Length: 473
Image (cartoon, rainbow, N blue to C red; front, side):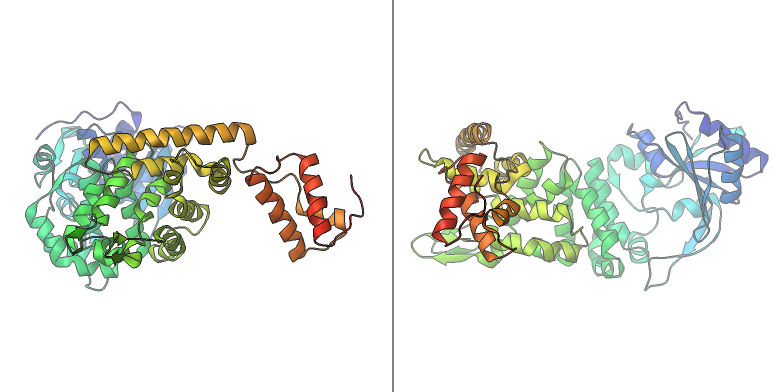
């Protein structure tokens, strides 16, 4: 047995003393131990005792300064408390048995070995003793340390049973492989393929939680490729797998939009940790399969895929159980606008086109530009360099117009209230027409977004529509 150096924190000694007083052997277990070995920071500690975990938690609370509150989850037989910014969860060692229709096990008290063998992977089935006789010694019954050295994800028990019992573990295997840059052991991966349809008993909320963790990894494409190869992605996100494949007609082919999307996603991870910008990368070409057409003269086209993709975003978010709030609207906006900046590359582009983009993108213009740069995935390095230089020109144009016109999230100085007071109008279609006319005039550069110019324009426009001002100040 190896000895593992626990962090220098009083919590370990206090748990050890409380467990000894209750005559309950206790161990730090699972992910905390794995991360300690991998030198990854973690402040979530799982303590397993051979006995009553809730009693141990209460005893530890009494020994800690301030007697922190113990939160008890009776249904699960667990308890949790906070020691400063450390979170400690306590549970009695147990063994489990599963029914085929559910991933929720029937649980009974068990030994330490029973508890470790029910863990999902060998790297999570490690323990560190908190007992006086062997304090700090590593418990490794299933070769977890060797698998960490080999960078391998493997199940403690027969993989087919592990995944059939709790199909969420298939996604967790891929998530850990992605986060840790590990491989999945071949028999374990074969078992994922064999049990992929069992994912249907898992709630979409649990699935999206794992998928988001994959997306937030350093190289999310690795996880998506594993999901695709296992056949899981086809079940949990079929619209994304529809991007895969290349068609050829008369020698004309198009790029594989699935692997292009993964490259865009990886490119985004280099510049942003924002989950929703990463989702925009995933969704930006989502409508290409629906808009793909072949024309003998021009080859393959995907006309309108940005507009159709934007319309698809709310439904896809709903299906995936992603939030239908400002995050969804952000992704929808970026999908809709992702082709616009490249159109501004031409030297002849008008300032009004730049104004419109700033107006529509608002505060999200920087994220949009990040997505557009990430969307350049050509294998021709000179071409990539040329495109990036072009985008630098676009950013300069945007900056110039932004500085002169202050168009980010701009609102016309003439509001609907001013229009109604000026012409003694009630809320109506005519008010909307006048407001839209002022907005268009500002975006086209006909007038500046200043009160006097805009008000004079309003009076002139109102006159043409037959409205006489009741006050003209």
